[in-house]
Image (cartoon, rainbow, N blue to C red; front, side):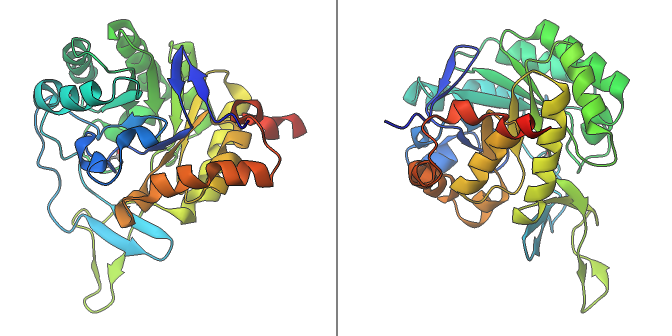
Length: 307
Ligand code: SIN
């Protein structure tokens, strides 16, 4: 009997595969392709206090091993989420862990969002996104300074009635140092990591393709780098890690668990193929058999013993 279950804080994930924030809407969008509880858990698109239209088009640029985005936190605002988007999906799938992702420009904005979301039944974990590469204020800046990361973690933890997972940036920082500060400030877990900054240029005009010129690159091309970040942070922290970055197969999921992740998110691939997570879940047990793995929880951080 193969065991794919992962338990964090008493929350049971029937497998470690989830969508990454921004690749499944608020739940009903992905649920229109396959039953959402095929996944171990669901992660919502980051919301802000007020609705945001996001950045001008084009917001997506193709790349050979993934794609770039500069969406700009498009979302209908936390009140609409709390009233209209989250309740139907958590009522439909009461046993599916729901990770609600929030973002903002200031500490106060995150706190106001948490206060509203604390009143919504069915949310299990908050993803605190302090690493969006596509906005002017807040976003990545908050995860680039150890003091700011410490402070926002502490304040969010104080306000939250659920475990909080801090989503960090891999761009231009000593991410292990930031991860340590988040743990010290009371984070329950880490989400490692957001996309890598990059750009594309249209050869016919010489003009940058994305409206913001620079965006976040995700997809199979960043998988080895994402793995390294997880491994590096798993060595210096002891809180659970959700791994994200270029995952495109059940083999990748297992590799991320060995590196130190307890759960894994699939991002860019969902944008190309909305069935990506389901295909990975369907393959998971076959790959476990191939590598003689009987229990996924037993391989978490397995690679660290070679230190
Ligand atoms: C976006 O909405 O720009 C992407 C969100 C993120 O990368 O955090």
